Length: 228
Image 1 (tube, rainbow, N blue to C red):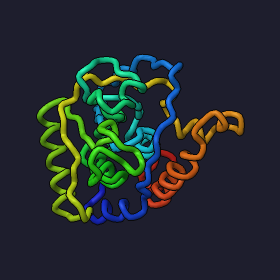
Image 2 (image 1 turned 90 degrees about the vertical axis):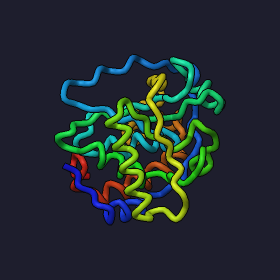
Image 3 (image 1 turned 45 degrees about the vertical axis):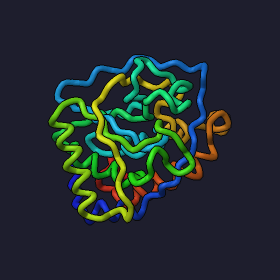
Image 4 (image 1 turned 180 degrees about the horizontal axis):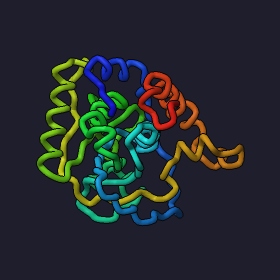
């Protein structure tokens, strides 16, 4: 099981880059329905800027069975990338993490979340502005809400960040899987040839996601599915 104390959390924050960049939409892409969560697994829905970055980090961890990019938090069901990108729908770009609680705890996933993006930036991450890029934890029940509040307070008390943490904790509503184009984006980039990469936002992947993922893999090699 992942065991990250506060010192480890602080160290993780120090080695990860926090620069973000705007995603590139593919209006023609549609999303297939989400797969049902297997028995014994749990879900966690969080947002910390562009979902490509968040997805790339959590897919590497032991105990995480899947990470799905999506949208949540707005008043309308079945949002699209175009709708969310306007910044007025109330939705955030999020990832839905499906994990085995016997291998990695929800608390540890939240601790990692608080150090892989800047939770002190209000309605933005780096160059991305708008409520769709807010730092947010969505809860499905009171147990999840209380845990999210506990971990957030733990990070505040540890003074890991010099500025006020603005991460919101909100009830999960109107979650929708993002268009297929967005799913496993960095994985597609890593495995893709020159032709595949030429059709992607390769500059963003190379300059932002790749350095962050590399540092994460080096620092926490023993926490990864394939040992890095």
